[in-house]
Amino acid sequence: MFVSKFYRLGVHAAKHLMKAPPLTQRTPYFSVVHSQYIHGQRHQLFSSIASELESEGVNEEKINVTFVDKDGEEMHIKVPVGMSMLEAAHENDIELEGACEASLACSTCHVIVMDMAQYNKLPDPCDEENDMLDLAFGLTDTSRLGCQIIARPELDGLRLSIPGATRNFAVQAKH
Image: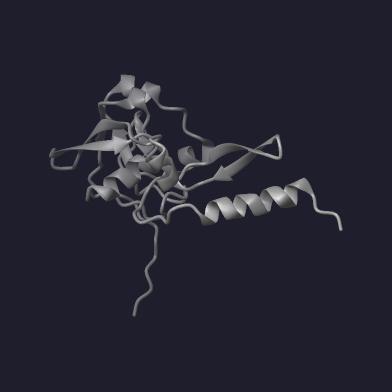
């Protein structure tokens, strides 16, 4: 019977993931490569378990972010590196909608980066984000979707304004 290296690697990866601690809270998900040596050969295992990263100290660094709501009230929070601004807002009870749950299918997490220097540090928006931004209420030159802004050390001090309204295209069924 032929058993391929890929099959053995898959079985080993499954056992590794089964031993991982359960996710007990909402945490950012990453695609991480783990290198392990099996029978003298280097194999890479892919995992998306954030709690595993936190236990290794990968996700300890945080940046300062300020959200400014439609009334001008400022909310200062610390955001773990690797977390989206949408998720950070939700975890800190900041009213940023995110109706499509970060699937790039709406513009309800539209935010305005308040500092052009900080805006220029962000990666360029992809075509899908630009398409959704075209639907956003109150679009500006520094508009982005909160689900697409990922905390990185160089963004420390980021200031984001939340527009006064959104264009939510979600249709709710009437009961």
